[in-house]
Length: 251
Image 1 (cartoon, rainbow, N blue to C red):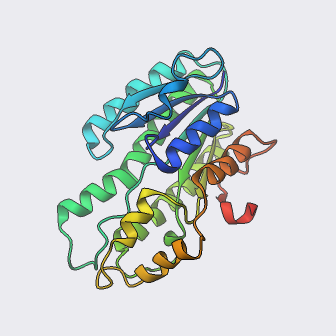
Image 2: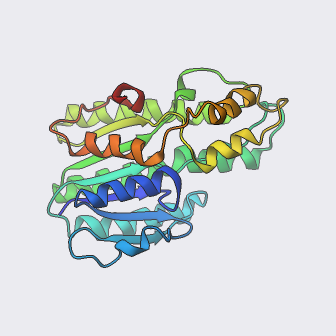
Image 3: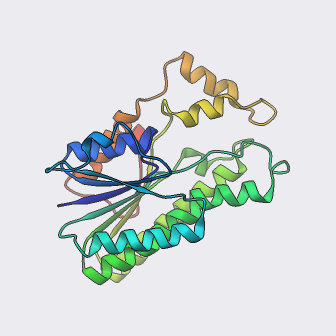
């Protein structure tokens, strides 16, 4: 059976991705600081079951050990493709570059960049050891490709994740492993992250009114739709290694 690991599966896009994959018969392991009540009903099912694993991606040392244990547990039992979906992320601190602390910067980078890199490194190692196909999905953002006032941390972490994804894809292609790494841009969705953005002050984030208008204009996409597009890509006939997929190309 195919297995997917989804970080940040307790809510928003992560929860929706888990649901969409479960409905397609893929076993899902959700990594988050708390479980999802909406996913707990899938636990123990015979067809495609959901398993919750606690994980604090801000704690880098613990995170490294957790991914090692998780990968070993998965790949020693796997007989089909494993999907690693690095979805968990934060947008804050939302502020100009001169107004946040080192601890805020480190926490942001730990979640948005270091944790996905640790997960990828560990899962790639086990995929090669056990000769199991691995598909990596790193959830990115349009902010990776443009400068946004107040988002110096967010734009930087997502740009770094894009380059990391492309480099991993290049290395795996050169090695002929068959493992795949892609990025996925979900666009603007109706999630808690959007609410956090709208609560910003204009001095911190100059585009705050634009994001408020997204609600008024009903421009925010349903996370289940966005997750469904990704699930269709992953279960389709061919995934293009190294590609940056975007939901806007499928609407």
